[in-house]
Image (cartoon, rainbow, N blue to C red; front, top):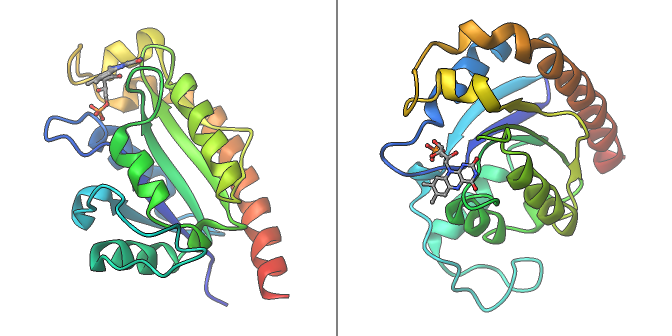
Length: 194
Ligand SMILES: Cc1cc2nc3c(=O)[nH]c(=O)nc-3n(C[C@H](O)[C@H](O)[C@H](O)COP(=O)(O)O)c2cc1C
């Protein structure tokens, strides 16, 4: 049986983003996962306009083909793992817009996260979890946070050390998050298909 599919969504789109570094590290760690298949999904590739639809696609099909392409992509997955940057104590505007550009596709699927920032992106992730509830996702308790001295060590604006140098600090939370993600992916997939 094919493994359930999880989209790893990069939530920052700016040219100088740090996001690629944790995203690539994470993809290396999860590429041969026994239970789940992961695919990197980059918001940059979707060129989403600011939301300008008559309503959420729960009520009215979206008219902009870029929004529809985004929804079609999201529909391919059984869960989501967000790479979360913290901008002014929240998620990026680009990620919030991307959340708003779909509704049905997010529903009844788990959402995990790797967040980063001075406080590990914790405040941004709490905002993301809150939006995820409205979108009827299941936000996981466990997440990977790169914060404090670790963040400034690996951040491209700081010492720019490889993430492998702080990996020991991340492995426990990564394992816990993946274990939880497997459980909720299986549970929600079985229920959606039942
Ligand atoms: C507009 C803006 C707001 C930011 N606000 C915060 C913040 O509230 N908390 C924080 O820890 N870092 C903040 N930062 C620093 C980011 O953590 C850092 O720039 C990080 O690299 C952003 O992710 P990205 O490079 O993947 O876009 C902010 C950066 C920008 C550009």
